Length: 283
Image 1 (cartoon, rainbow, N blue to C red):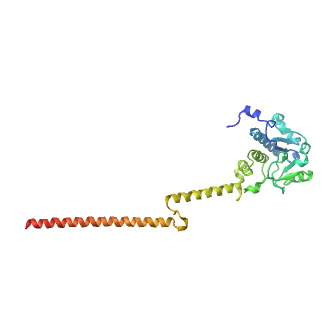
Image 2 (cartoon, one colour):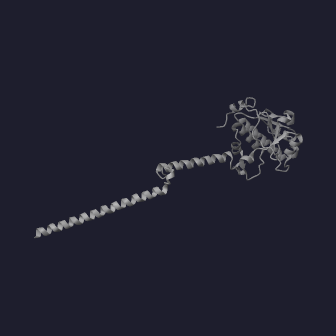
Image 3 (cartoon, one colour):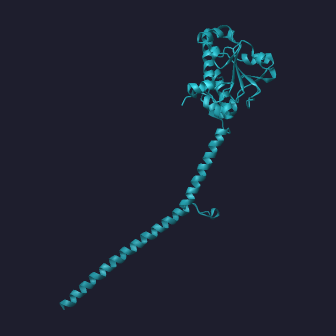
């Protein structure tokens, strides 16, 4: 069941045991048109909703709020009362550079775990790939750390690894709850991405274990039924047991034939005896 309003009111960042900071960088306002800014604000709303419904919300920041993005936020209601740290400041003014990790699919670094001491930046850019590599270039220009999510280590995807802002946010949020990247990806990524666990990943290992267990169970069942001999070195197998069963069937058929022959002989002797008795009485 969905959490109640009373539960949501008390489920705040200040009371959360999760200290991981996630930031949406909205300083890229000038690279987007009106429709893309509307989509950006909608995705921020999705992130806020997910965070509020989490048992331990992340420390959520939206930085660089200005221009059209700020106007759009004002038009949808009193966003300042949301349990989100909205600010017009740049994220570099809130966090030390050594503690910043800008998330970008173009980065050569792969994120292995979330550090509560770090601030993870998600580029607030909806551009339909018109400005490919922009966030990574800005991170390098500012001299801050950068990394990509470990999608390739866990999943094979039929589409590009570019995700929406709220998908990245939800993956990070899920990881803070499970400490498991594969489970986080599978719980968030939509089916249209065609994501499948890579061979050798945790999911594949679990599948192999289940297969081995099933094989062992079948083997035990065969042994219990007598299809496999107790001594594996003797070479006794299902075919040997089947041959033995055939021999028993043949023996049973021979016994039935013998019984039928005995019955026929007894009947014949009885008839002959009656005929002999009749001849004696006649004489």
